[in-house]
Image 1 (cartoon, helix red, strand yellow):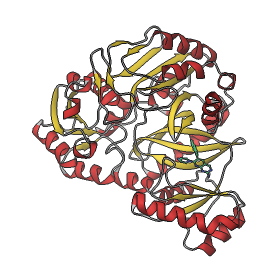
Image 2: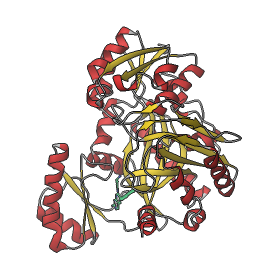
Image 3: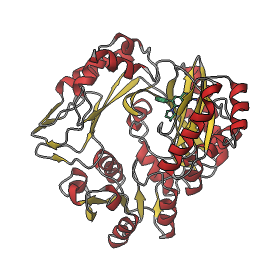
Image 4: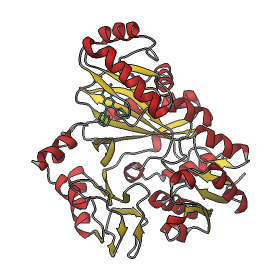
Length: 449
Ligand code: MV4
């Protein structure tokens, strides 16, 4: 075993993040890139680089044959998928392992289970996680749907089993509209995912999105690293995340964290995972599990001191978890601002030439980004170009430092979401921590007029 060269099947800031963890462990890296990314920072920093195709992601970052070939040509012994792209593709994980490469990720069977939201819920329930009340599995007929909805009470939510990320959801206010909305949801799901399986849940009107970070060694040991509050979203895109959540007490964290860690231990989960809950009126309700490293993982790193990518690589290499649960302390507060190349008011993408760039610095300030002056942001990929992560001993101190860091950031030549963050950080509801998943979009609507 002993991983000595990792192929990073991703781009942008997360490719850099993985490169940094690898180099700190004395491991070489291989970058893969599209023709549009030949001058990207992840390509410059890596020890080896292979062009795997044209700009369109389906021909490059999603091109399984090209990526496996790149690993073989460069004699990489492991593949890290980052987030997005192939990270939650169970088939890809199997192909990697079938080529005698180490997959730096969860067991393929667990990726597959959690990718099917009906299976995920069944599994979570069997492991003792609290669920949103709803149908026991898929809805098989309209009679079945009526019966379940009457039991749990309206409004109900129709969700697609192959959905996730909010795609294909329908809120049903009353029984009169159930039949037509279920059939709409089914046909939309069939078109989007090629699978018209849907299930029903009680619709929670004003919850928070709170997710727990977990790690398993694949052999029945597992830990949790506390929660992140990701309630500030626009169109299912997170804008700002924080750890710890302003509404979760130390006692609640220990209690819920204990439940999720036990669940992961019992399923034999391997690697990094995130258990997503909706939280309303003091109760947690499981909705989904993500079987990957997440964009917002640095806020967890900031408050625990654990390097999550290093941990992923160690586990993939067959090593035990580097920390035990009783060695983990949650200290202080961290906030991440996602900086996108987009218009801060219309959210229209703003790719193009970065004419000048200066990253914020100073105590407890981290910038994860592949930007540099003279870099041309390509129009083909996600608009997130940087993450600003700030730590403070208290939430108030963290917010003050974050405002200072945002003042220091310079990104010229393209529009960015920095002004949006600056405005958000002065909002009384944000300062008091009093926000739900609906707050940001309602606030943006109020700004418009
Ligand atoms: C819900 C919900 C209310 N009630 N489920 C959206 C994405 C997917 N991960 C689950 N989602 C939701 N599920 C029930 N039973 C509201 C949402 C939701 C949401 C959740 C988290 C963060 C932002 C959101 C924005 C709109 C809707």
